[in-house]
Length: 146
Image (cartoon, rainbow, N blue to C red; front, side, top):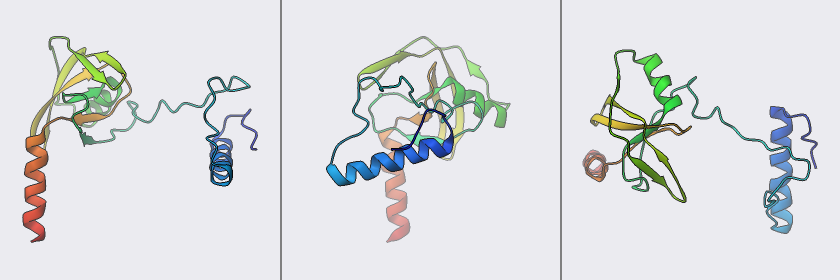
């Protein structure tokens, strides 16, 4: 297997490639370890950082609210300085087995209208909750293709 003691993009890719190959051969999940044997763990915390705005994703309804992580809010504020963070009552947003408290809110104009997002102290992207918009978008796409 690849040596990942020196954490670099090449070593991470080599480890992922080796694990995929091992999984294809024997069906074993090589990532199923409670604690890595050498104590090294790779985590990508820059995915939804304040450096690059990643966009807005429709929510499947899992959280029940439109929300965004604080680093992604900082990223959109860098692009759109006219947006303002707003005071908002705290609310708990549930994510599967975990939850996070909202700390504030931000209203963002989108192609689907203006959306108010609860801001969370997490590294998550912007996700909006509205089945009405999803139905509208589906109807619009359907009318364009028929």
